[in-house]
Length: 215
Image (cartoon, rainbow, N blue to C red):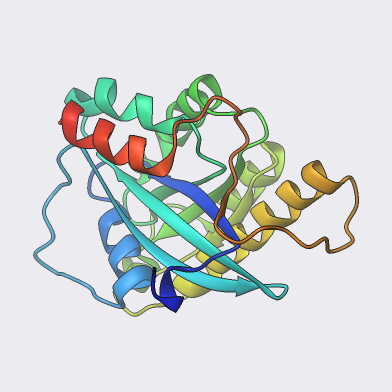
């Protein structure tokens, strides 16, 4: 029998996307393990970590996938958009080119993910305010035009990391709840229910096998 820590009401797959070097891996490690690695190297392929939080009395387990930003891995990572109910689209506030590429990442996400996926634009490395190249107001306006939520974070000093993940998971929960039950009213559900927006999404175990096999 699984331990109590293995019990959850919902399992949500969330992907981290954006250029290489914007801090996706450190956002993942800060949220799931409260760790930051200054010597963090570029992710090769795809890796994921999990963490559970409470949302409106329900235990929501987030399975967060860190997709590689390098162009040569794009063919691998595109397959991992399938089954994702949320995405954090990350850029570096001190490198304008990473913000310029947000358009391309958003298009790829729209092409490969479910149309109802919840997307948050994340300006990471807010601790580098003295090197800022992307004005907050500009990014916020872009997010509004594209119907994305927006936040600035720092994986280095933990600023808004918890808020970013908690906010998107809460929004996903509300979106899924409305679609499943047709109202905002809380409805009892079975424990360990995997929730995705796509009925053809493979199971969690299958995705793990696919990950290993493809890499």
